[in-house]
Image (cartoon, rainbow, N blue to C red; front, side, top):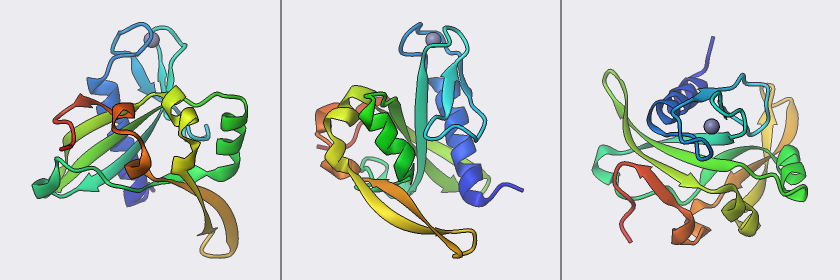
Length: 162
Ligand SMILES: [Zn+2]
């Protein structure tokens, strides 16, 4: 059984796959990966060379032109490895308006991998309780609000208000 958060994440990945072409071969061949890859959610089945991560957040219908200042990330340790070897993949942030019958797409922003590498200060460590609070696990938040505006490229919907 998928949790509500996983269901939202799956939905966001499908929306990016449907609406956004591959940054390398420019075909709409992005495909969700299995859950077992840390911080990697999509692969291009056209060229096999483009990988991306996707974060989906819910936004209020009255506030679609603003962006969240902070979003939840994944595991801190895989992030450190990716940073160390300079292998940050593009990040897609998907805004979902929660409706009566599922979610409605508000916007999709792309942050290029090199922009993430150059702005490592936006990653903030937090200790999360997992397995029902029995274990502590280092995770990260992304302080999206601290990213220079030029690093955030709106690829679907309206860009944020300046
Ligand atoms: Zn491709």
